[in-house]
Length: 131
Image 1: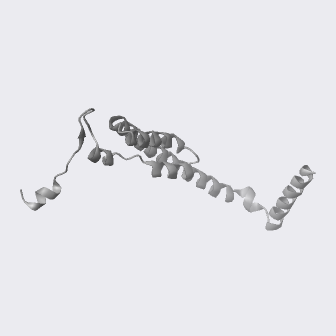
Image 2: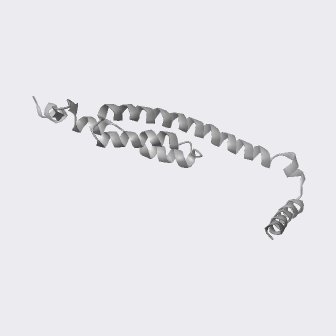
Image 3: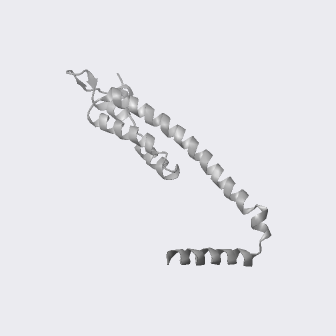
């Protein structure tokens, strides 16, 4: 065995009472928690679904239930992919809707003064409703 082979070999610690690898397997399981948080903020709250599975994965990983943690990691990963795709579609739709609305004829036909008067009337009506 040369020095390269020695450096590449890994040691796996096994708890003989449960026959579950402890150290090296635990670090290979990803909980995808950060991705789930990002999906919550950019996905209009849809990211809560993968967040639940990410938290379950993290909890099971810390309790050394690595088989179940791996299953939850896979579910969280799959749901994060689906959520990200849904987010992209939603953002494209929202931006398209805003773009079409701004460039619609009813918005363009009005003068700046008419738009300003509509805004003033809206806020005056709101003020009268609050009284």
